[in-house]
Image 1 (cartoon, rainbow, N blue to C red):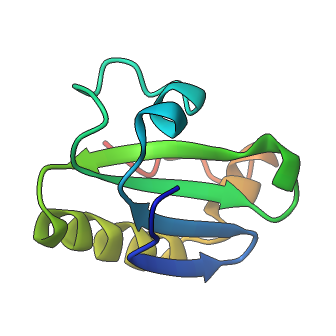
Image 2: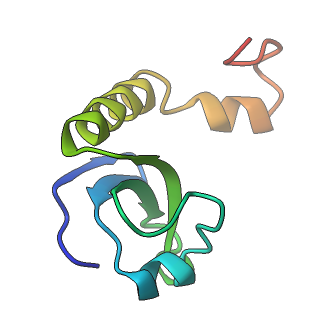
Length: 97
């Protein structure tokens, strides 16, 4: 990866913003995102560091990437236990309608 511009760890996941080289773009399996140009909002898990990272979103500008990043981090902080509750059957309503 070239540079990480923003990074925040919430529970076991780290969400970060970075440009991706063509090599990393291919390794991330980010096909269908229009190429390696732009800024990528990604996540990685401290539970399974060998899994690498996942591309969550792509933005054309650094400002747009920062807005997406801040929204995802805010959501993750507010709902950090939601995924565990869903897998345990404790939530009957989906998070997104």
